[in-house]
Length: 473
Image (cartoon, rainbow, N blue to C red; front, top):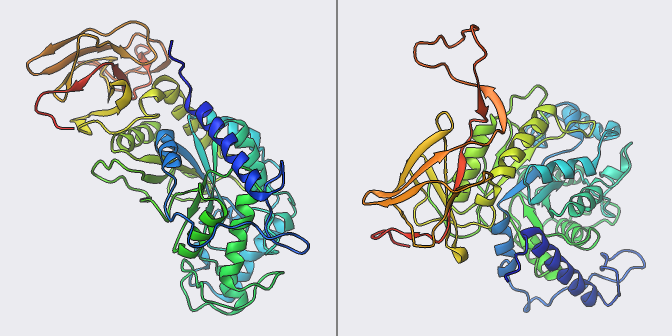
């Protein structure tokens, strides 16, 4: 009998092992080390010549298996519906003061991290990345190194800690976005010569309660984030980060570095498959931060993007911008629930998968689980039916073909043209408006024209499959 362990259970076991290592290395049983401060011991660091300057191979595969993550851009600026940080670039002194004063009224009393985490879990997310500090320098965590932080707002609570705890309880991996560029530092120290996005690691100008130079200030943040918030799977550096990346690995050699170590294109999907870790970062609407009245992308577009990204070997990091009161905007919530419905039916085809020998044949896209010899063909239907012929896939005597979520096998035959599969969706998922038939008016109200839907791509599972002759691996 083979015991099948889910990805989330495997990650839980890995998390326990990581925590044991962290506790053992700190010399303090049951408690992870904390960063240096008055009366505190310094955080233990790996020697400069002992640190591996690359991601842990095991963590890399965990990341690639996860496939789908939730990105959260949030801060005091959400009160005005601006983009986060970027209004400070080329801003007048008067506007800068008004932007930073928003922290004095930021009080998201409707924030329920457990509700966020439940929704992310229902949407099929496997990890979360929260903006711990964006380019504006506002810290969504209770740092000792700056007074410009969430615990100095009317809200007064450590949002990063609340997110980490809630999402971890739901079985999701936890990550923090961190901007090396810090406009608050530039503004308060008079170092505005640089771009808002660019850090000046050489600047000795003292900053914050500890009066630290810039690189020590940010290294201190990394120590806090990696030692105070439990098992942090990922750090995501938005900008030049070499001193910080190395320091992170000296604090936690196994922490996975997203941007800063792997390709992370924004608002685009690379056109070719790459069999290594990469991540496409997409927004639900147009803006990263909360946008009042935003029109979100249709669920079908999000689902198709996910399919194309996974077929090409990448992860999708889907961003939302929560409202200033701490709630997720209704349009974003509806979109995540639609995505969750698709993942409930077909998530197996995009979790723990790698690229097939070809990414697609026309509008049919492929993923595979190599160790199992399983191929998934993802395609749209017309009126809940379709016959597909797959040139790149060959069946074996043990092959079974099924439609994920639906009972029974699908009819198939190996033909000279390829593997021919007849797909019929019989499962009643949701009622949707059916398209007009031949000779019918598109908006006719003579009858209720409904169909079983939704009209999204489905996933066909083909077991014990091999590449067709002449198709290279």
